[in-house]
Image 1 (cartoon, rainbow, N blue to C red):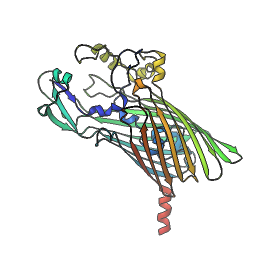
Image 2: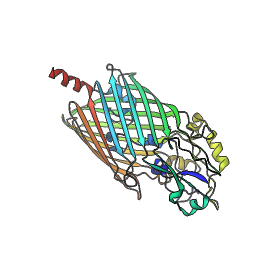
Image 3: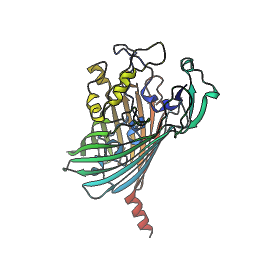
Image 4: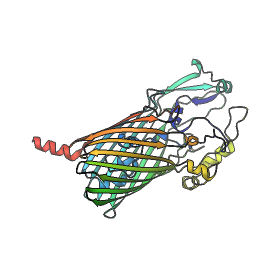
Length: 410
């Protein structure tokens, strides 16, 4: 008997479709697979409405995920925001992503921030079945021996500081935890491998450049953003027999905000990102379902995190052309009226061989003296894309505004 987890496919379904092994084939698919893929999902509605980008956009309460260095330029004294994403609603109804973040600015040069991310994969049936069942897909009720509620979460804290009038830097420390089976293991006969919760530590390094440019109609802003996210150890679900890379990410973006008059402004942004994770190597399709090359799999597991970061730029089976396909990019526009009402549109593109996540996003929001609300909606442009019709919501509160409101009532 062989233990498998039906439903855990939801954790990676947005980054894989079917397997093909010829890099020259039009059907070739070789996505980068990582532990905790939830950390690659845009958690807030502001960035989601602009094509899932945020490294160089205007600083806001949710900058922690994209570029914590932006907090050194934020105008508010402090704030807290909660975001919610009902994930993959076209496939299931019990997968959700929750995101809570907050910041406090000590002065005009430095700030501290923190966030908590929680991803629940709903209820999963743990099943035991033999090779024949794997081939013909037959699963019966007697094969289900338990149900689990897998979840993943992370918590982090960051410090940001201005190094120059136009430049800031931030460092983030993150704890990551993944529990895929809630401690439920099967001890039957035959091949069986127990699984355990996995955890690791990681860090982000971010830079942000924002320069005002005086124009006849007002002050515009040009910005550049850079982030290295989730630089840390690997995760193991079987007490270090094998290890899995976490989604270390290189992110680079630029934006330009131009005013039309005292009330109307338009910001255009572009961003590219790449997972700093080496490509796996697979054998050709065999007569059985055992398509993994065991030797290569073990060698892949032994690659250290720092070596994997460098190797990720030069190890694609298809050579340089496939390396460029591993780069994901997005563009976004945001129109604002009086910096209170916002309308957004964006586009995110991923190559077909790396997951085929291609979609248009639209969003809207408003900001008052105390509260800020944003929402975003995803419209897939690639067929059978599980991201289609995904919505995100963010609700934020300005701490200084709340304090002033309380003081006025006294």
